[in-house]
Image (tube, helix red, strand yellow):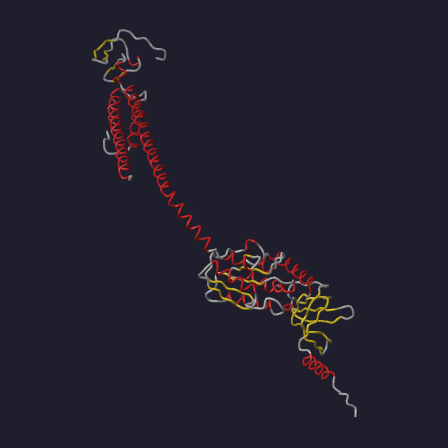
Length: 376
Length: 70
């Protein structure tokens, strides 16, 4: 009997897909990106190829770790699937750049885009509360970076509360975990003063999570100020660029976060010594200055009065000079007729009687003859 | 018309200036001139007294300041 199964077309498709699901629910394929196409800002189509083969992949923009370019090597986690109409393709679960070259390239592309968006703008950077009392820490609890950081922190400063969210700091799940941790800290009712994200050194592949779009944006969007210290590399990760402050190592991070209590105590001791030395001298100096100012004020006030007095005396002299008495005293006379003082001979004729008043005494007089003046 | 009440320096001074201005008028007759002269001298006197008391006030304040300065 013929054992070959017989099915309809649709049954065939279902059967194949069941087989895929059973055998390879997930599989990571590494290959070169080609023919990348994004449709309606939602659907992503691309091929992965190597020297001998090409396979189609289908996903959404949410799978993208950042901007990508044809030619980059990718590691794509997907589920193979036979579409009932469109043939075979792989449904994308996760996309990561693969290999140092592609990782660096992906970071470069993402950086360009985010710089354009202004995410790394120095104006966005906030200053950290110094010193903080509550620290939110995102790192791997098993790492040396974590142990170093906590040790140096507690040596330098007391009274700190450190809240830790333990995450993967490398690998496929790292970006999502790190971003989720940042969001979780941000959603607490009583938020920490600062979020610290650290990890130790490693290869480009190890540090890749801190160059992904999801982590970089999460750091930039954090309402709590952030301090990020990733690896020892000279290349600064995008998450560090987006942070409010960056440190080169976990120890450096501790130095930036809190003062050293020994240094502070030394400073306070020497400051108090200097204060008591100079305190008296400063007091004397201040007193002297006030005294001088008081002296100046008095001089100015007195001077104003002197000037006014002088003006008064001048006015007095003018008054006297204008008075009839002083005019008469200089030998002038007031000649009046019918009680009115005369200023012009046109008011007179011969034989008129006039009264003449001198500085001392007066007499009457009769007009003999009249001479007109220059302007009479 | 003579104001010898408690006015301030500015008022007294402007009063004096007004009197002087009138006295400088060539049209003025003798009797008015004499009257103005009398008012003028009274105002001068008032100003002298005013300024003197101001001087004394300053000296008093200065002395008080020196006392309280310990």
